[in-house]
Amino acid sequence: MKWNIVISTVLAVILLGCTGKRGQGEPGANDSARVADTSHQAASPARSVSYEERQGAILYRKYCSVCHGLEGKGDGFNAFNLDPRPRDFSDSTLMKALSDDQLVQTISGGGRSVNKSPLMPSYRGTLSRQQISYLSKYIRCRSLGE
Image 1: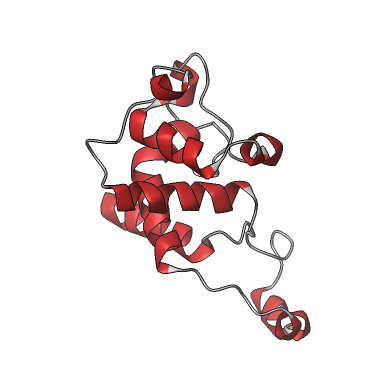
Image 2: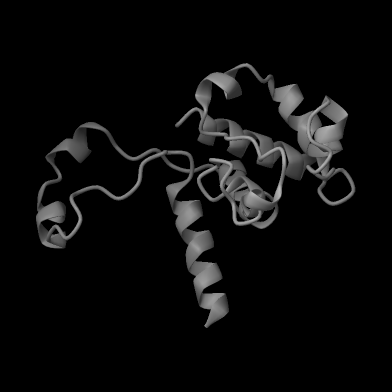
């Protein structure tokens, strides 16, 4: 039962990718009504999710969501035990100020390596360079709402 929830959640994160869009329609709206109105979808096809984004989503869910939350708002279930609180990736102004290299350095070396919270662990010994790259790209595209 527990694995079904985990697998469902991971698949939802993967399918949502970096679109930044969530379910459309009003709560309680009839599903057939939403399916019937596809005129706007033909003009703007859904963006496909790349392999890198899927890998980043899986890594984010496993390593980052505990503190940063599923939506990256710094509200993971462990965030309330931390001082300072984890960074809010949904703050696009703050995230645009960070370079890709700074993001990779923070993930690799932890918060202490960039003069931030020492509570943010280093993932250099846990993740490969490629995995850190996937993760940073995923965080970047999520923060910019792509």
